[in-house]
Length: 347
Ligand code: F0G
Image 1 (spheres, rainbow, N blue to C red):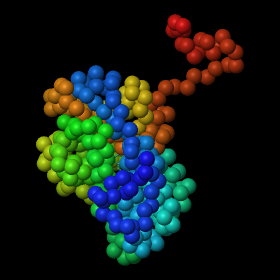
Image 2: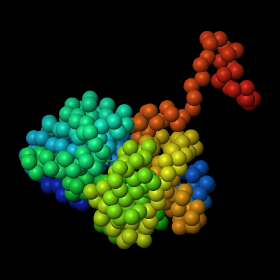
Image 3: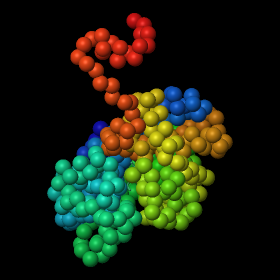
Image 4: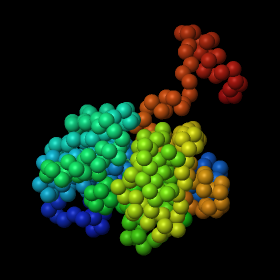
């Protein structure tokens, strides 16, 4: 499939003069989740954004933001990131020939994301602070120097990301009752809501946050946010007001989940649906399970859970949460015993 700018040109802020920087992002699968549907008594679909070129939904925003930066004559760019934005920006800026510095909270980035930024030629800066501090510094830096800012405070990012809502409507052939997604900086939920409104529909937005980083619950910044889901370890979202408005205006809700529920949704997706996403992404499914249990989402509803990033982004958590590795001497009797675990296997 061609990239998003080509597919949705008439609904994006581009002209014939815009140099299109694309990796043929978008067109990601919408997978029926049979086991999870049975579990919650609803029709659940997974919008698998890990299938984007750099493994996260950020590519949708980045194709537009980097194309527009190039059109505006930018030669250098910067972003703060919990990982995925930096990986995506590094790939698109590399392709565009734009110099990029990524500013990351030190020690709080999943290994796969860091590797992507490093190999794609970005300058990688680890700030001794959290994401909120990294973003504050980057915003100060762009006041001093003529750099393109590639965070989702850049409106072109949201324009690109709203295309996910268009795809959901096309793939489903209708409007879901609910769309569940993880919320960190608040950009993606705002973009989905914009995309749905521009399409004349209004599914209810279910925002999933980690309990230790849930400013959407109170509407106020959270100091020292913490969660195993590093992608959404954000206490002071740049788009808190828009994210809150998307929830409110859609008749939606917020659910804050403890890490153990996020991780059990993460294992459930991989083990029961064969869909390996990163921990933050599983927050959408954890939020759905919670909202079904407390009666908000009713039986028979159609629900789309957005899985924002690929599981390979965070191999350390997969290793820690996954199966133990069984050592085996090199003979077939041992292998038979260890591989089958003494359980009967029928031909
Ligand atoms: N899921 C994943 C995998 C993410 O990487 C992010 C955000 C979100 C959900 C939340 O989206 O911020 O638009 O509310 N990651 C940003 C980054 C902050 O720097 O990669 P949001």
